[in-house]
Image 1: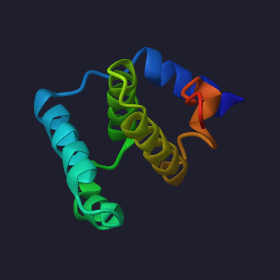
Image 2 (image 1 turned 90 degrees about the vertical axis):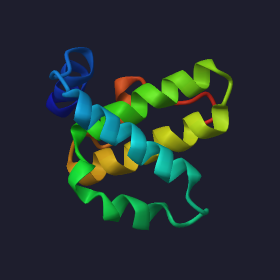
Image 3 (image 1 turned 60 degrees about the vertical axis):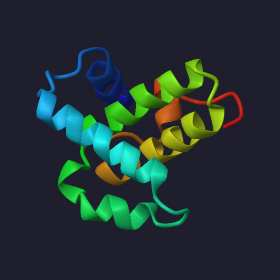
Image 4 (image 1 turned 180 degrees about the horizontal axis):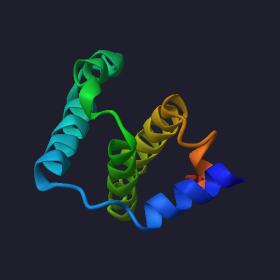
Length: 105
């Protein structure tokens, strides 16, 4: 339960993200979304310095935006990626606990 509170507080009150880092996250998300199917792990490992809690937060934000625009497939993919990375970073056992589950997920 303590982990959940940490995640919720982080998502509600995120630390200030510098614009360069934010741009780097967005570029990485674009690379992941446009790379050939199955090559996502290689793309992510090439930019391992960007894989952190801020990147997971950005994935969640972009997935919400995609869902609002009606792109459920991309939104679901980004949520799943955020869950996997969040687990590997020790952020949360499952981001669904923080209210980020899809209708289909």
